[in-house]
Length: 320
Image (tube, rainbow, N blue to C red; front, side, top):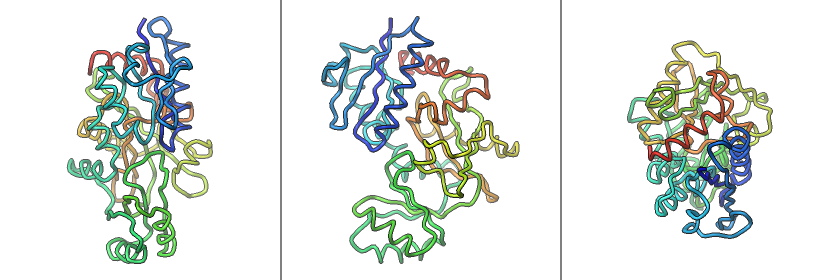
């Protein structure tokens, strides 16, 4: 039996989401794939120690316990290429994107520039490191972009640290809260929010696109960390976009998956506005909790989570 080590937890502020993602994957393997795989819970503590079966182990010892890994970490170390680099060093095949490509996808500015280079719309932006002179930064942003503005960390996931500022005082407050961090401010694009999950080699396609999901937040805010996991957002699956919008979303997601060198499963986020479809960000290690958007993408196309897990693990074992 092939031992699948589901690595969850981690050192980032997305620790709790990672625990839930990993738990769901472990559950599905146990319930649906136990004839092929033995699930192994690999816990990574907040201080960076791997735990297997109650024992602290080093990364070098992981091959004693697992044959293939599923990277269920989110945020730092999981999505920025850190874990992928360690697994590659110790020759453990894994589900997830290779280190260098993961690092580029996780860096919002680099990812945005790469996506823009293949003709996909992105919001006008400025970027900077927050200094001890926020007044100057506010004036700089205001001189380049019209309000409202979206302030976001250049590295990070689950919309953590993302703020919408509609006035200069609101922008000042948001900048002050991020002193010393690399940040990006984008023009706020009005429209309908959408997300598209993609997977390599599924159903005979190089990159297969699931149907777009439309996301509506009831209080008129954006799809932030709280709304992603508290069940209050309305997620319409499949989305009811015009056919040309749906096709553009799907084709854009496929192009992003391919151009950024993403492997196995990914998810791209967009805004569908009267001005066109705009890219927001890409996630190379998307959430796999029961509340997450990738699992919710499967039923409309007749796919199951255990089918997708089996497919991704098979690719990892083959080195694809």
